[in-house]
Length: 283
Length: 299
Image (cartoon, rainbow over all chains, first blue to last red):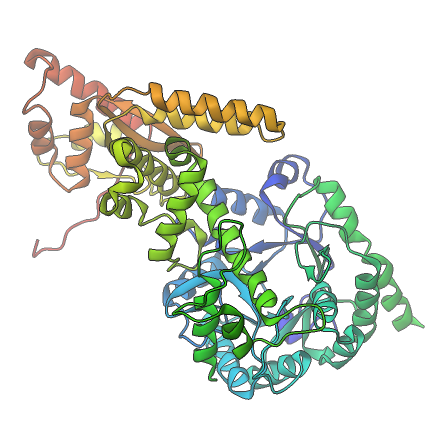
């Protein structure tokens, strides 16, 4: 199950996000890490230090691209310059698959630089799936869409979030980057059962899993990626790997970033659950 | 409501400026109450009204774009003062919302916008424009394209008045009215030193900055913003150096570039040849030149 057509038939283990505060540590100490995830947009540039660092990392590590501004769900057409630059980067990194969010963020050429929630309508599913297909065809690698954390729901929605996710991935024939922290955050903000969500995802399409921490406020939870993973999220992760098997897993830590070792140790906690899936299979 | 209609409706609200207390405005885009505007498309829940749910996104948008402006233009912030810089940034972003997939380009139209709206810098307009140009040049030089550099021996082999040399794409040339390179380096140094500083220390820093800006005297300088080992540096050059490099960038042949540079030069004619030789040696050693594309037969 883990190596599937949505992650380029790879069998990656536990990775962490490649972040600037860790560059020196990684390049000088060369720690053992299964793989790194990069934010594509940070490297969709013409030259300079970021690409120099990237090339050095590529010499030693496996790397997967993750985007934040493709906006599959935006009603407007894809940005051609974005796609061209993304394809150049894909050639450079040889990423086996690529992910971005199931959300929107731009309209009439103006960008919010946020991951805005989709209305769960059939029209939105059709438009989004069409764009995912176009991107997948243009980049010529598998694309996985990630469920986002959200703080608002729309009157126009015609289905649940997981039904919408399933509708999009079936129509686009693409993979899923299942973010169990985002499921938890949204379940708390919108009062739905997170396990129902995890149980409803087509397991065979899951290319990768994200785990992360978040911040709790009085009336809602914000997806801040600045804390360790909490137990309820690990429970969702456990259920997800029970369903999908030993899947490439990545810890996101983007703010108040601690030492490399601390981030990596937090990510490696996922081994507790991944190992049990291997054992379960062996029995 | 179609997908496009919904996205336009939400984006208008999300990109509307916050109140001075960083809350969502009570007035909706185009008039009317924001609470009614939000209720039209966003569901409330048992803890938050439609207004409050929309407000989360409105605040996140402004926190994100304003942080990006602060990160990219610390020098302009020092010149204008923190509060005035924030007000200016809001006005700039209302007229120039991001049109790029990357926040890196958020300030790309700031210089032109400031020229059109001199009220924001008022008496400090020239200084403000100088520092914005330098900060934008720094961004461009940081991740601009580098091509294979010509070696010093490549240069001497082909030298002659008709030689056309191409500058590395990442190199930025600036003619400025104030020594803003010193100011920017000072501001950055303080930012590094005070990352974890107390409030009292931050206040002292602010005061020091105001003084540093006030003390800055006009002085015509010429700068090349360039890279060495992937780090960006500001190199002051003579006026004549700046003119030669600018002419070469415009595609003029070497002979013409030198002629332009020494048109109104204070460098004595007998010293000009040795100056040019020295400059080219330095520039070539720094890898500032790359091979010019061959022109087609029709050109």
